Length: 282
Image 1 (cartoon, rainbow, N blue to C red):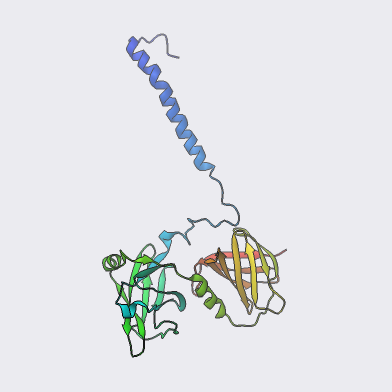
Image 2: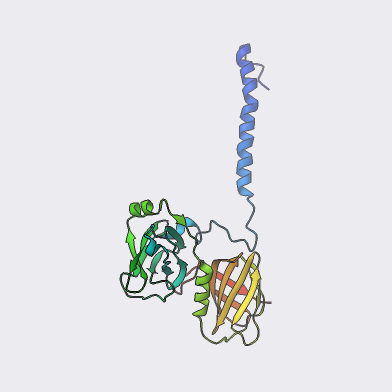
């Protein structure tokens, strides 16, 4: 192993012989790690990668609407939280709701419980400039009117918001309710029928059921349940798992066997690009 022309003291030679296996093991370990990096398991069709840019938390914005505990008269009132025109929660006393949304401008509104939102009344409506990776904090208070309490919203600094919601209970947004409102807003008669099996490279196979002459459709794809409507030559889809809506998509017919469009996490606004979705039919 060593040249016979070199002479080492016995102690040094023994030390070299002991350290060499450790050095080799370290080199092999490093090689194994590099090999593992190059052999990561690819994403299976139908499984949406959690770290993709359009759904990663670093590339989304958060809006937190919180309501501190109020007196007995106001405590029973549950004012609505309206996100971009969609009812996502009736906020209970001492609760907060957290919305993960695409960056950009969004409207947060409130009103009296069970009422349609009065857009344009400044006390009830805020325009939030949500930035990727940042959190906007909205305080909701119940203000008593002549007959009932009305929710009023106010944007507060981050420090104020964090302190205000620190001891509050988390309430999950009801995207299913909001999704129904989103679908109900698409009112054109169906100009196409998308019944059958469709193929998407990232999502796998879509099985869609649309009765002839009907606007409504249902289906599934991998782990997702699909509900939607056909409005004109467009298809509006909600993807849910165990009842919780996670993604939405808007697709336009580009021929008899092609649907092109995009999808987003949460509810897709018309003016957002989302991630491309391309479906084909045999």
